[in-house]
Length: 329
Image (cartoon, rainbow, N blue to C red; front, side, top):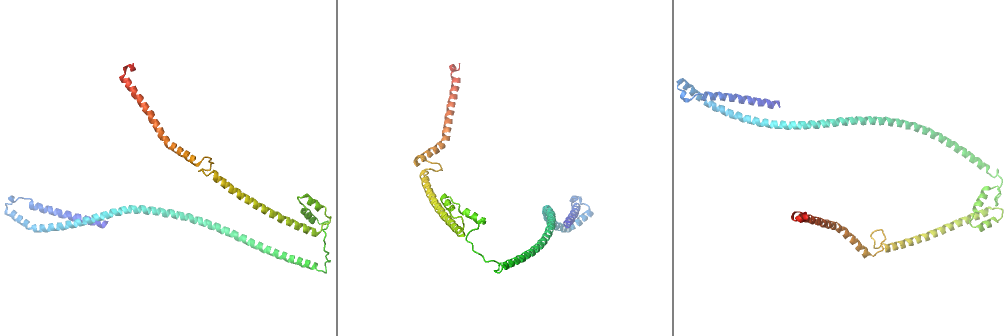
């Protein structure tokens, strides 16, 4: 920019210098008329001046060249000025863009600082939780070791007890067992089971079981248990058969319901029951549709008819008022 300004100042100075010299030369050449050149000395001076015309032509050529250079410089200056204007516009735009980017970067850096602070706090919490987990893990390890030792000790004691029981159950240390067939009177559990197995809805069976012998044998309990199992199986089979029959009856009822529904609702477009024939219902719907369609037109026609009567009444009143004095009086 400074170089362009210096070149402009230099061109302007040269132009002013040659313009000043040209003005002086013109004043010297054309300051007097030919009639005034009567003095020989002045004529000689005038001839000398005319001899310098060749130099004047050279000066004119130089001036033309200089003006061409000036025009070239002016074009270059104009290009420089256009470029400078574009650069100024780009400068303002780029400055705004750079300011926006700078503000964004600053806000981004501030956000990163917040994220870093948050990450640091999270890392500190993670370290604290990790330390707590390590302490708890050490406690669990010590507890597991203690429980393992306790289990080993209990297994050892259990094995010792089993060995003693095996030793005590040997034939040398136990009396020969006598097989019992009758339930002892102090065996309350078996007697309770017997009472539960004797429960029956049929009172005859209940009386029959109550009239049996007072002694309860293991075989009788087994037989009653097998009877109860057979009754359970039979009851289950009866229930299955009954459920099958009920399911078949339900399917038949559904088929009947579908048939009746198709018969009753065959002429209906909705879920409402329609007892009229199909043609009559279609004709009725058509009448309703046409009535709805023609009702606005009927309203307009009625309105027009009423308006026409009103206008006729106004015309009659106007005619009578202005043309019939008798009616007026």
